[in-house]
Length: 140
Image (cartoon, rainbow, N blue to C red; front, side):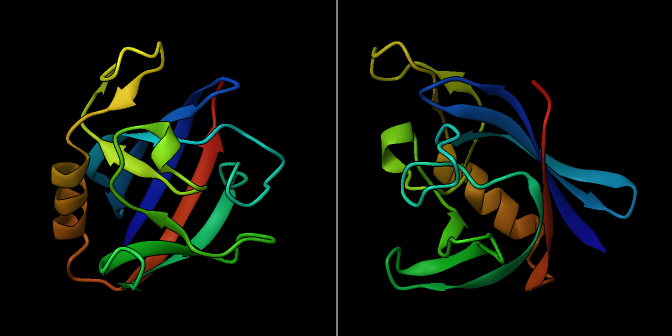
C-alpha cells in the first residue's frame, strides 16, 4: 500500500523545509522537496501542521478548482492540503511540493521551484488510490 512520509529537515521563524517521500510497501517510488509555514503553535493560517500521522484524501477543492490531497484529523484544523506554491507567503498551513530550493524573489528566503510539475508527478504516482496516510516527522 502506498503511504507518504514528510520529513521536515529545517525550520526557521519564517518557513519549514522538508522532503516528501511516497513508499509503495518498503520501496520509495517518489520524492520531492517541500515548503511550509513555520511552526506557530498549530494556529490556523500561520502554522504548519503538528508532526503525526494523518489520513489524507484525494478530493475536489472548490478554492483551487482541482482535486488535491487533504490532510484529515489535524487537531483544530481543516483544509490542510498539498498544493502548488512557490513562496511561503502563498501558504496558509498547507504543504507545497517542488523540485528544488532557490531564492526566486531575492527576499533572502528559499522558495520552491517547479511546484505545479511536481504536484502533477505526485498525483500520477498516487493515481490508483484515493486515500492513504501521511506521517510527518521532524529531524532538526
